[in-house]
Length: 602
Ligand code: GCB
Image 1 (tube, rainbow, N blue to C red):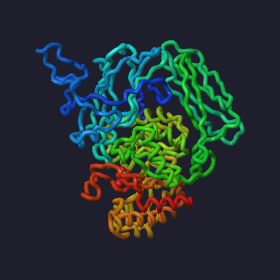
Image 2: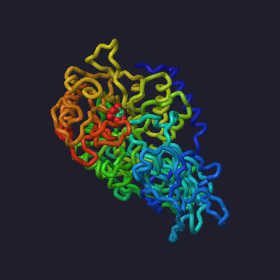
Image 3: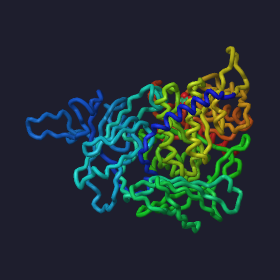
Image 4: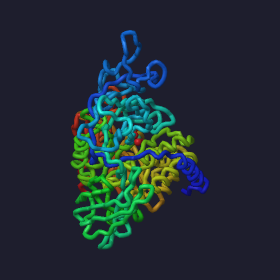
């Protein structure tokens, strides 16, 4: 149970060596509420399976065209086909179904004519997995990670007419990436989220962090604390934070590095909660920049085995989710997609969703803020990560930094989860300890967890009392574990004899359990793949988990069937993981109603 000093020290050293080299790229948050031109739509594309797009005879980012009839150019964006952005390339063209490699996308546009902006940025919500971004023939930079946003400044390069943005995206899997080579989800390639041309004044608020101080929760006058980050050469001395409904208009001093720390006393603050998801309009003003956001204020803590939301115990009635719209067979990438799945979750009686296994689209987090649904967010630190490579740790830190920068101000998001089903070793423990320390250094307004494995029974004897003693739980606020009793081991009635404990005074979440069922296949409770088997499995599992001392919530696996190349059983799976409570056509299975009924009692 005890993480020794050696592991903590090596985590610290890993972190220190990384911080020294971390790049200072600007992060622009709240792009939903800034002035922008959408670059979504049809993009021309050139396939590059042998990855010669930056070298050799096909430097596609130059967007060359033959100058006369004897000129040789061996690609043509103008004559190329199109892909829709945002979207998975695999599901748009039959010939790309299982394509893993490089594709170059091109979008041309003119400078927005009514713009009086001083600076322009190209912003990409996410592109899976490695991106090379070029603009008007110049290399802007690269981004690694399939689910976090990135942006590059194009102020010096933009022209009135015929700008061309060319982005090379490569979704090849590799052992030193996050995720690593094998996952139980579809490797949707391409530009999967919105692309925007953002316009800002020469000095602007690039990001801000605002939250309710836990220490003032029980006081009549509460305190909001935070930080503004400005970008620009001529920084103003002061900025303002305005919350009209609370009669707040606070002047904030800006330091020479563009940072403004503040705390504001507020009376009559209505706290955000699932029952009353109260959001306030918050305006941040600095020089000519003025930006609005909708922000809720809440606290989240643990006390012994309880999770406290705004100081009161909460049971997390959850469900797991992938970032797909199964009806469209695509990555989710719009408010409509978010509304669809959150609607199913609400109908199920949920107040909580596990956004598995990587950062989901920002729309769902913003919609959860509005609908009053709590969220667990995570990175794909999932099966088979190369813990020994310090470069992989840098990638994890970068991805978490991007996610925290994006979602810090979202009240719905309450848990950062640092791993899923990873086996304890010294290298893994040091890696995850460093990740946990990094998150805590950026964000003290959320809880930490990880979906752990329970201990294996020893000597081949089935153990009826399982423990979760993964050493990483020392660094977490909540102990979570995945358990597939009745599916990957035994039949559902095996649940009757099992119990679980951690031996630690912390809350427990069952982060996964479930079994597969083909919607519409009815048989009896012992016939695999039938809705009856899944229904039976849910009943037995729920009765078993209900007995856990300190159970504070659960996120059964999973709300909807999802695409996975691991799942090839003909006429049953056909490329889909069937553990959903809703089918890919949107039809509910019997187990949906078992869980719904259980949540009514909670
Ligand atoms: C798990 C994984 C999840 C899989 C699931 C399954 O433990 O965390 O990614 O999809 O099991 O269906 O087997």
